[in-house]
Length: 405
Ligand SMILES: C[S@@+](CC[C@H](N)C(=O)[O-])C[C@H]1O[C@@H](n2cnc3c(N)ncnc32)[C@H](O)[C@@H]1O
Image (cartoon, rainbow, N blue to C red):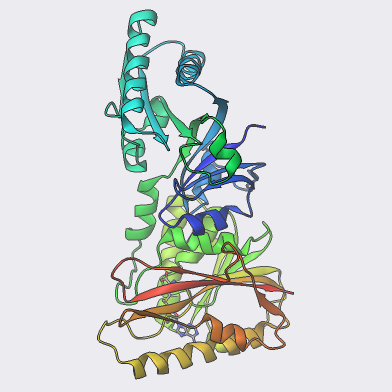
């Protein structure tokens, strides 16, 4: 089976970690945010009209698009010949739409290659070709989605591997090679916006968990298809909606009765749009500190409670008192989960950007785990947590994953 090339999102390490459960990594290029992998797990219980590749991509929050590898070539001439052949084989007649994105390669050669393909198609094959990035710039998912490029034609991805900067001596000594791949799935931006902005109930003050991060949290817990996905701090129900879209049954609970009701309403509203069963979600008002033992097999994926300090001018004392509250909340919740059948817990702790320094809670929580049957996983390239934060934001989310021993 051919390998696939993944174009990773804004936080490549997080995207790469998300993919670990779904494929076997061959090569990771940090500089270009690319990951080459094989043995993809395409299985999905939902009967959906999309291709299996698109269904696979639609569950990943951290991958922008991915491409099936066609081959590896030593010269630009061979790349040109292979692209031309692939176009003619796959679309023997009619107008063509084409884009080429290159990584580890400059814009000018890409531009020249695009022109050469366009001219050859016209002059030698009498075919019309609309090139969507005639300037040779790497395409973004907005353009691919907006132009319906994958429906109307092709995007080819070229990765000049040597120039991409592999540090090993062998790589430096070897000639560069061109890995050529054809994009098979790209993020559906309209659906993300619908889920993000289109929910009837949103609470801007408490901050909104982006659907993509909810997907990543679920993936990090690696649920089996018969596992229940639980969010004990469900708020507006983002995790529950993402879980149901992926094909899982889900439970949402929250301390706040109004949020529980509104989460259920959001869940039902999205069920119609994304064609999952309303009955796949159950919602309850429960204090997470008194979370009942779960005997059904499942996982927790949650943003958690990030505290009540959102303003930059918060005092150190306020942050400290919120930290204590959050730590004790998680300690109590973890104590209650001791006898449960939940195998993995992915959650966020607040990480405050206070006076130029990051205040994070994970080390403190991990130190308090003591005899707990949950242990932190060092998933993030050997590190136990990953801070998800945007420039200028005061509260970031520190992602932690605990696994049952
Ligand atoms: C950051 S919000 C979660 C938002 C949610 N991820 C969403 O997408 O809307 C935190 C939630 O935790 C809830 N919460 C705070 N303390 C709680 C507790 N002890 N038990 C259960 N829920 C709690 C709050 O009511 C709030 O809805």
